[in-house]
Each structure stands twice: as C-alpha cells, then as structure tokens.
Length: 101
Image (cartoon, rainbow, N blue to C red):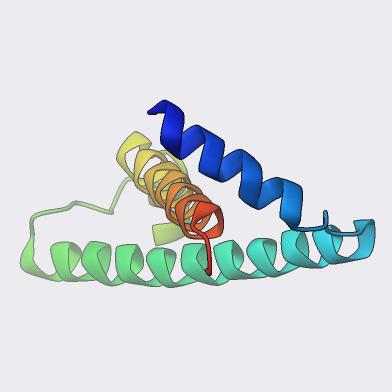
C-alpha cells in the first residue's frame, strides 16, 4: 500500500466514529446468517450434482447409506464449502474497507 493511500485511510478512520459493540455483534450475526444460507445453497447444488452423477452412472453410491454420508466423507465437498466461506469473507471484507461502502 502506498503512503498516500495509508494516510487517507488513517484520516478517514480518524474522522469516523468506531462502531459500538451491539452494532458489531449485529454485523457478525448478519454475516453468520449470510454464510449459513450460502453454505445451504452450496450443499443443495452439491446434492443435485451427486444425484445427477448417480443417475448417469458416474458416481456409485451403493457403498453408502445416503448422499449425506457420501458427502460427509468427501474431501472435495469439504474443500468446496471451505472455499466458499473464505471467498465470502474476502469479498465482504473488501467491501467494508472501501470508503462509502
């Protein structure tokens, strides 16, 4: 980061009051709800992909009792959810750092 950007960021933070605890907790709660909904939708998409793969014969689910068991043991699924969580955190952090956002 350049010195001018850092100084303008410092000046902006000096002019703006800090958020109170209740507001920060509210922001964390909203982020938690948003991430939960994002992960729910991502899981629905993953289940649909697994069902499609099972019907087409690309995935064999006979060794598992359910799709949930298959996904629980899948490292790809865990990495997929972790990637989405990190991406959401990175995107929401960038938008909060911009002035006027």
